Length: 126
Image (tube, rainbow, N blue to C red; front, side, top):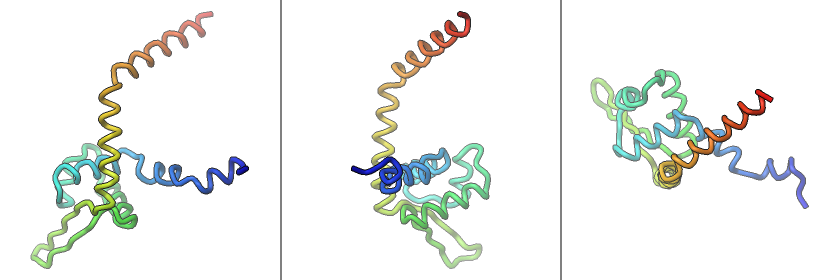
């Protein structure tokens, strides 16, 4: 039987969620999935609040993992475009499923949060 540390060491979910679970990465993947191919400036203007540096880091990480392809065109000025790879598209499919689940259960989750908050308030009053 594996102990907890060994399970964590062999569990890919922890690594994947740490790498792709942040809002910038998810936004980038969803936008590229929706539009197909985008330039850096198009991505940056579509993701409210992201800095140039953070977008650069996010796209490099996605390239490193084989989820995004970066194409540089030899033009003046140089044109650079980003698109999902087949691996990135397969992750997009999972994000779409998660999004659909979230939309389907949003009211239920909000209701549960309110009930929890009321119970917590009652605890502090007693």
